[in-house]
Image (tube, protein in one colour):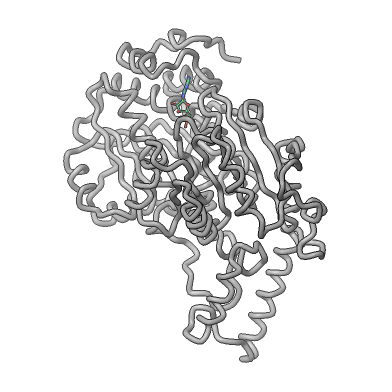
Length: 474
Ligand code: AMP
């Protein structure tokens, strides 16, 4: 147990203490209280925590302080932060700049999806702190535009997401480029074996800090569940949005295609809304996020990966238009409301074919989400896990059906009896048909349309790259 109760117990340098005060932080969050004293002593850290816990300040404050004291080489990258998504990278940079505004440190961010030129110019000025997504970092390293030989502090953020998004090999390559002698901070919300192995390789005698945001967030968020037929979700959403107490809502869709459709329907119903997902350009995403932050959009429709780490003040409601297929995502999603001590509401729609997802989520959060059937679109059929009058398949059943399909397809290809591959011209017609059913969540449409890259092998001779390195992030 740490005996840190207030920020003054942390003995931060004056400029840092002032910045923290100006941000209005009164007491350190648990991860800050547990990590900062150890990090100030120079120890490595293994942190099991996710965004929303105050994690960024937990690493940025001590790293800034240690940098100030170490007085390392000028005009070279002394701190490297690797993070999986562009939005998260931009937010981390903002935090370093906010907390470090009283220190003479320079910082910059690099990520893919935008022109490299401005980033090159910023790098030439020799920033002390570099925040990066792996794809663009490696591109620039390969072009010899980045020198990591003077890195003293290395922060790996959201290591489990890096793994999910196929970046783990890139992380290893970055690791080969930074000095052995350094302070390393490793963060991950979960610890699958590959992540645990990577952490062992990277860390020396780390202090381990676990912060369970599940209970932290769940306590302050009023969660409700609504059973609804898939075809009625749009009307239910519009009906809910008639309530003016929903000032700023983040609506989650499982697929990019679905996110666009929801946004179109909302705009048609005269509700100011924008979308943010992986098929949008970086500029379009930045614009949509800014419009949501400044109140021009009342609703932002997002997919999981695009929304990860989004930190917008005053999100009054999170609405799960679709339940996520990974239960951890539910916790991430609802954590977008009730930020930094405020209250918030999370409403989840559940159709008959999402019953399996619901079970997984409730198992993870160790509670039943309170049911609200007091609305005009309540569906008894959905509540019994029925889809079109027949029992819906569980996620495991869907996966095994998908696997059987893949095996059949391989066999057909071997025997030369296969239909045209999906990417081919002849295959396009079928693809169009399938993408129409993209939000169905079935083994073909739903799973393939999600953004969980690299997790699901496609059936047949797919032309998709398994490891989407260049499109860093979302
Ligand atoms: P993070 O987990 O780093 O994304 O932080 C989540 C939110 O909590 C951000 O909006 C921070 O500004 C805020 N925050 C961080 N530390 C504190 C603190 N000690 N007290 C109040 N708010 C905080």
